[in-house]
Length: 572
Image 1 (cartoon, rainbow, N blue to C red):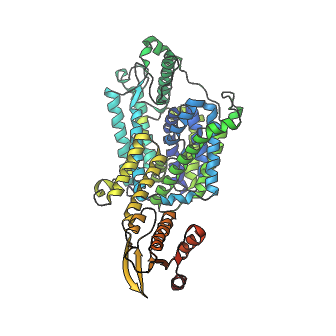
Image 2: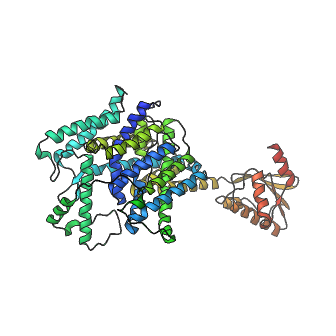
């Protein structure tokens, strides 16, 4: 993966051009995630602006891009469906406050606990998710008012221009690096697309459409029309929602005339600039009371966890690609501040975007300027240059995202799976599979960490052994291996209280006592020796282990050999 992303030195020109490339690529993703979350497209676009700008200025990883993401959208959709959009904005604000608290408590360093196998599963799964998400751009509005895959000439042209975009991104850097290859590809393919849409035969245009090559504007319009038809079908069903908020409603209850009327009723509307949500007449305010707090708290906790895990994982990946180091705690503070402001201005929240971050890095973006240009450029495109962005074909943006997929996927895992431990392979497949199937990155990463930790514990549990020797009329068990909850069974099997001499010692010079399960196992072993009329001593405990026994006080009745302990302390 690292080999694909060429190394750059930071420059203002590269940062500005990379930021413009990111701004173009942000538009369809922000709109798509808004549809996933069940909120208007402008909510996703303005969320991408606020999250992107504030995290670029105050976050802990220069060159990393943040915005509205699918990982948080799948959490938001449940809240909006169950309680309404008016509960979304306080939930996003609370999410930001939680993230700020995590940063102030300096818990960002916990990202170090993520194993490499989990990281590989994360990036591979996310690459597959990004790739599958692009399939929606190969769809247009069908005769039944639902999105359907392109066919015939439009499909062939779409595939051809996607391939051309990818070819430009790959081969242009071999001739010049004056402009980012992704930006150059978007410009070239946009010009070709405008020519096709202007001079192409009318027979190439899909039924009900105005363009042969679907543009960003077409995609937004088609999705709005499809959503309107879904809402009409929902109303025809009596307004009964399905259990799955993502499941389409059966539109067969509508006649073709009703579908046509519904589609015709969807008109583009001028959206106001972002304003504080409690001043926006489009929304009713959720009651500011304890009941509202308990409603939004679970969603805010999940949003905060998903956002921080995805952001810190992306930060680690960008660190690896650029061979620099970001600040995890500062990133938590930056993401939290961004979500607080985003919520205040009626946004859906967001976090770091691995796909856009990789586009930025590969285009030469290294400093905070690239993220700032990306966010500001997005707002300019949406507000002032809407006719320009409306002409950008989806083929160009899909090609850019497919190259992100190629660069994100860790291809080396395909031929090294039989050279690494089986447990690591299982974790990689588990994390990648869960990410692809459920699109829940936070749970996927946590699940991988838990499985990896259990695998680690199991392996170390089998490494408990003892060398036995006699000294000063005592039988000494020289332990080897960590003593903790998983190894206590092996620990108990090492001893023979019935046949051991009157004085037995356990030497911890090569071992450590790590938890209460280990201390309890030692206490029960000492009790077995007392029942046999014998004594058990502990020796060569290090300072941490000794402190644990001293803190336990009367809860444990064991004899610690003071002389040997002090002797080892002096040696250390």
